[in-house]
Amino acid sequence: IRRQSQMCIRDRGYDVHRLVPGRELILCGVHIPHPTGLLGHSDADVACHALMDAIAGALALGDIGQFFPDSDPAYRNADSLKLLARVMELPELGNWQLVNCDLTIVAQKPKLMPHRLEMRRNLAAVLDLPLDRISVKATTTEGLGFEGREEGISAACVVLLESR
Ligand code: MG
Image 1 (cartoon, helix red, strand yellow):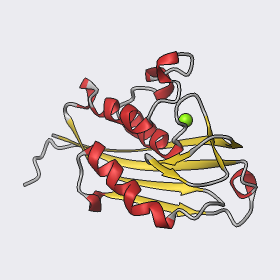
Image 2: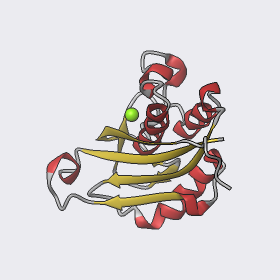
Image 3: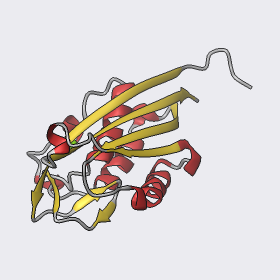
């Protein structure tokens, strides 16, 4: 039964990181074998970052850079799934239930399809949601733009929150 006072907020998040040699490629906590990886202060998990930004945006809490500043050595090479877990524990989220999330990862290479289920499982565990509420999609840009030139990977996320 839907209470009359129940409210929903939908918001989106977006992030980009540069691909460089000598870094591990980590997306939704999955370590993916690839000659290049994403550069960043944390593990540069661009998918987790877009998701955190979507949640923070829905609650008008600003961007994740404010929570986990890249000037803070504590977040050097930080596991972004753990940062996501901390976002989920924010008191501001207490009156809200995450209903679903839909992530799109834009990468020319590597093929992400073989890792999709593991990515969704990782997010399901942290978000405490059933697998069918967590969508992870991947697309190329058919060689166009920075993703197409394999200079970087971008991620966009949409989340829906419902008042408890
Ligand atoms: Mg980022």
